[in-house]
Image (tube, rainbow, N blue to C red; front, side, top):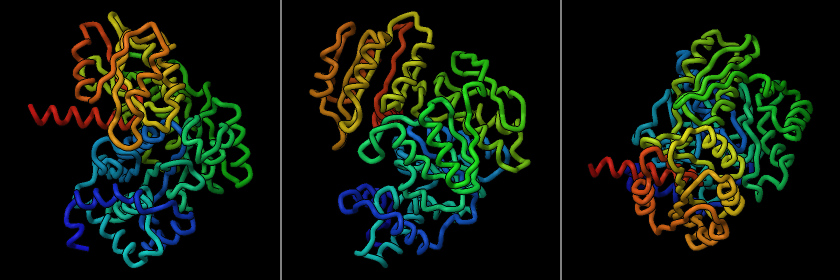
Length: 436
């Protein structure tokens, strides 16, 4: 064991290779393994988050506000953009390579005892590592994001929860979750527990019906955040102000430090959820400053002056992205860099981007990895549309350089299509910094 996994890099390589030799385990198998580990982080208060879009942002808002209240917090999210350690955040800091390796060794020691009868999947391995780290640092709260779905997600082996949040529901991962919003919502609702409060956005009638029916069956109290709860939205250059009606207060003023309009709802869900906790340390001031100071990479992030990076990758995410683009004042042209993975609704997304009439020029590039949509297929998909220039590039380096070269004063540039694309762009920027 020591010889094989002496370094952080060796552990990461092993984890990345696990999809090649593991298959999905049953929830019973996952639960038994968590038991064998001794139920790490069992004494922490679990805030469990599921949904299609906005999960990571809601997690980040929760942790930011908890930290402002002086409360220790561990956060497990996915995917990462550049470094696998991004998935494990304790008190606002990404864990060290040493801590990562420690957790990996703890989990793998138990895996070796069970071999070959059981091996965690890629996501399960990371989940168990996260809980091991949260146990090591005795965090009071654990903010836990589901990977895919909810009911059958590895994170749902946790039975004792403090509250559940279900973010917006849309069409994604239909091969696993179902073809309709009702089916998908039913899978996400599976994280609910009897007697545990549930917060969700009340803007899709059929989804709201599923949430209320499921909660009613198991005895969970729901706290929907409706349109009337959010008002007086004022969009600035790099911030958005809004008023939110919290459960035990009147309307309270909040600010999100982003131009992404969709983050208003995510911040509102986080603040509404935390206001339900019976914890005097979580004051209105802590909520306000926690929400205001949270910055989440790859979500309408201004990575260079007037160059925005957004990880929207499904239809609902792209629609939210376009709403924000419309709100951005622009005296020049708008240019777009786009890519996608092959298992997403890229044809529908291409149609939305083309028909929006917002972009004068679109740069296309293929991603790295097995899931990448081939450049020829991407070019053919956009080829049927007119009204804007199209350019295709074999590498991200070339596409990114062209995007910046073609951008003039007054122009705005956007990079969108996948969190994998966002990660590759962030890695490219870091490489440029090192080369400087």
